[in-house]
Length: 108
Image (cartoon, rainbow, N blue to C red; front, side, top):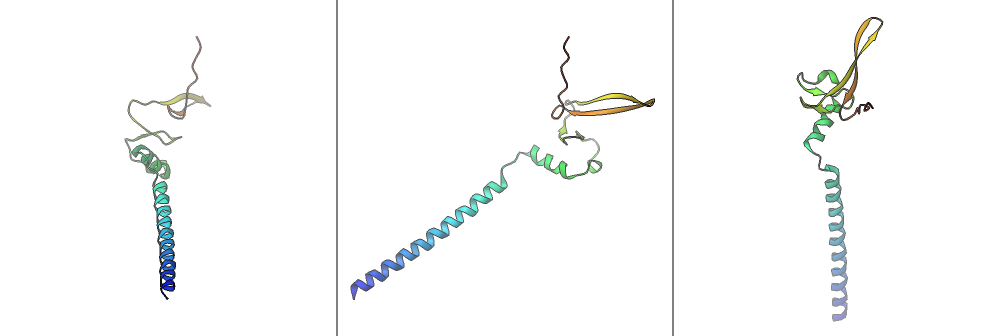
């Protein structure tokens, strides 16, 4: 009779251990998915993601943003452009900022 009690206790202990270990494994998977989903981004990346969602007409005046890559520019960062004559009209052709446009170096 004691053998049956020991065997029953052992079976209950093994089943309980397997249940708790599977629960802990599932919990660690959920936590790791949440950590990878948040994916630590810098404040500059968050601002760029915000500006990517906005149309260019809804951005506040005074902010300097490249119309091509939507990178926020400081006062010291240039926006490359050139003047173009088209049918006797003066137009400005925007090439981009120093992040998305690399001007060719002239050879002297």
